[in-house]
Length: 129
Image (tube, rainbow, N blue to C red):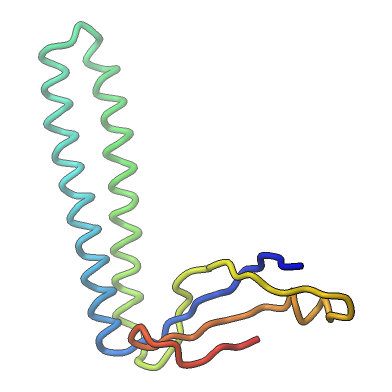
């Protein structure tokens, strides 16, 4: 029988991976800032056309803008943390699922134990089981 188990994927921080992460975070931040600008534009447009109260429109748009500003703060924090990361350290990138063979006599603790795949510059360098 086969079952699905979780496997953690960790990345070894290198100069290249650090630059790539920085670029991804920066692009995400820029996208969020553009969304804020777009929301402000849409808010003005709705306030001029709509018969709904301007306060209601303003409140709803401000909530969305505040959500994005919070995400921007989080990205800024991640960028700060990234700058402090030392080369060679391992960071958790994601979690994936893997099929594991289970048969009579298998040790359950070994099957369900934490498994980790370590990658460096998109190459698997180690598998911890």
